[in-house]
Amino acid sequence: MGATRKTLAPQLVFIGGLEVWLTRKSIKNMHLRVKPPDGRIEVSAPLRLPMRTIERFVLEKQGWIEAQQRAIAASPRVEAAQASPEEVAQWKAVVAACVPPLIEAWEPILGVKAGKIAYRNMTSRWGSCQPATGRICINVRLALYPPECLEYVVVHELCHLLERGHGPRFHALMDAVMPDWKARRAKLR
Image (cartoon, rainbow, N blue to C red):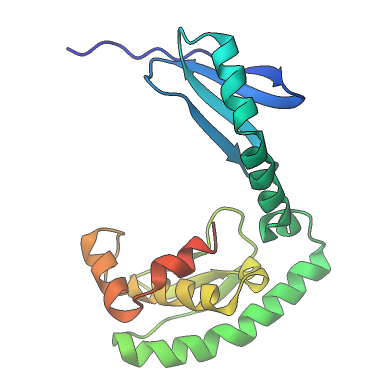
């Protein structure tokens, strides 16, 4: 039997004027993350690592941290979170105008037929598909991203009509029909 892993509750510390959420764990290396939507700084550190070592690490990475926070602040995610109902309605109009021609173009390529198409303002998914009915739901927030991202999500959901999960067969299908799908997906992160 392996050793039990221990994790202490995160604690807020201030390092060089930065708010840092520090979590001590049974790990060998320190990890630093800047998390959307607000640019929260999280550090995971080994249980016995001296605080001065953690402070030095964070201070050395301060330029990188600030660049990550600027990128998060400029991301469409922040705009989407603060949108008015009128803005959401505009996004829906844009997405609803673009999706049907994309589906029409991709159905014969994939040999599938989509069912009902729905549009929703979703916070955690870009789309969904019910293979049994062919119903596809597309996130209206895609109006804030480059057009190739919307096309990627449409193709992704249409591929679910052939392959339900996200396993190797699904990835092979995506690779075959849209070789640059991973680059498109990366723009949504």
